[in-house]
Image 1 (cartoon, rainbow, N blue to C red):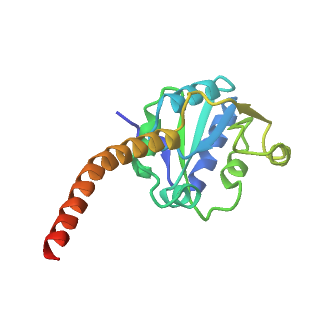
Image 2: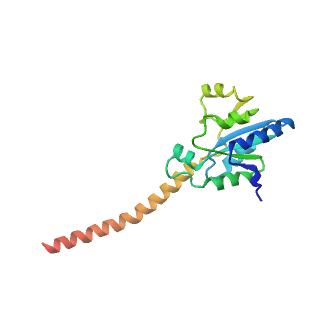
Image 3: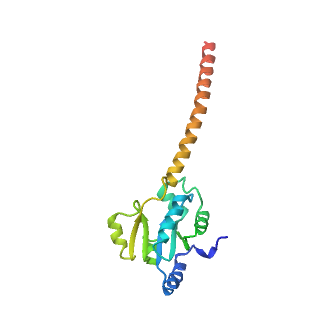
Length: 187
């Protein structure tokens, strides 16, 4: 069963946790993302991230933040489920909700991780240099799966579109032919 205390909804609640980990001499790793439809790539990514320290904190974008970045049809999985799902991964120690209107780098500045883990698409080399002001170091990981949540969703949508198109095409042609026959008969 998940430990609801491992899910942090208010950024201010991270400060005493981080302080406690630091006093215990723990090396803190931070990563962030949408984690929509948690899949094997997410699990592998978190497992790899944890190798860089003792404590892995995962920042999860709120539903609003995901919609802003990825479109109105996202996320597929609501934030409460995404947050809880991550607590089931053995590598994840704490999960923090990242709100849409939070100041830029708010979680990074609050945690001041020993290691910030990101993907190639997340930050430019210039941004990484900027972030090193708040982090011990920034590690960029390659994708851990052959496909992303967005790619999986596109495949589902394309498959559904093809099925609908195939079904409708035959029926539409038949309907048009019937209408044309009716029109011919009326003349």
